[in-house]
Length: 232
Image (cartoon, rainbow, N blue to C red):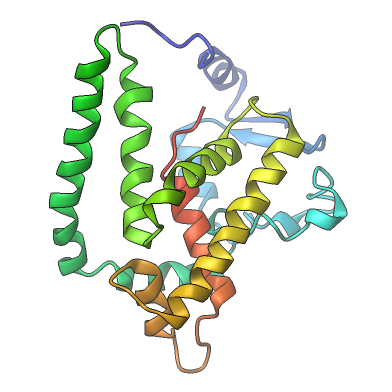
């Protein structure tokens, strides 16, 4: 078994020895603080004094060109009560029957990936051949992404979640492409619902006082897709 030298965890270990919370430089170029210990993160994450939203700090989105502000909306950068409301809608859509029905499809995907590995022969990168494509394939199936589009969705999600990988403009292009295709897909599901999660979310409609919008369904779709891809 080989180790990916690009995933050096030594800096995290070093930060833990410096102190519970360490001042760092964010990707945006601004100063921030990194909490690298479990108990510190456990205290910070539920505290409403801290925010996940891009708009939480002055200039927090300077790293994005003005025309791209708003294009990176996911559950990762929303705060309660908006985050709580959308997460609840996804939880309701994950019915027991829907989850149980995924079993056969997951097995079929795994069998196909293993057959491809056997045909390729050793050596095989287990992450590239099995661990990376499996979750994104299942999430695409869950959302109702057409088979012919799944490879593109996988590539866009992988680019968005890469750290120190593609240039910023390439990441922004992937984000725009993923969001644009999801907008079109959600609109199509509105016109012709199917037995998938996007259609279920649209049909649920959310709370009577605050019905779910197509834009919010797109937000949930982006969140699930990028969460399902591996992080470099």
